[in-house]
Length: 210
Image (cartoon, rainbow, N blue to C red; front, side):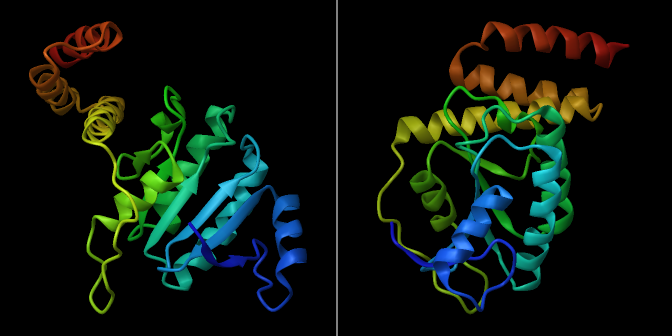
């Protein structure tokens, strides 16, 4: 999918695109604006705390410019530390509270476990674009038309994964009752829970009774 512009990650928008992209790589990420106004940030390597702190100022710039749709492409960040992803989660909560955010995460990767529950997960950039295109834009803007579709099977798997992620985060906040309700819903839909989630349910049930 073509982009309308490649933005500088250091905020110097008045200079040529080629040097800006190089500086962005030196800072550890690429930043793009799609033709429909959706922004994307793609770390070029596993995240560390220093890179995430640099990203904070970039996210603040996007918020101040009215960004309402953001894709955080973590395809190259699968080996990021828990500290870095937790810090990124906190920054997304603070800097982009009203923005629709989708994280691109490879299949079978647990990197999204530390991200806020309101951040949706997708397996590719095109899937992330489709997720954002399915929601109407705010007043005064047109809805984007999807260039492709996510298969029903993939939508189902993503939905189950995101409910389980929400359940884990809810239990982590001490709300075991709602976390258990989420697992019950998934069990009814799927027929049974994966073994590791059955073990989590037993632990959460014991914690809620205690």
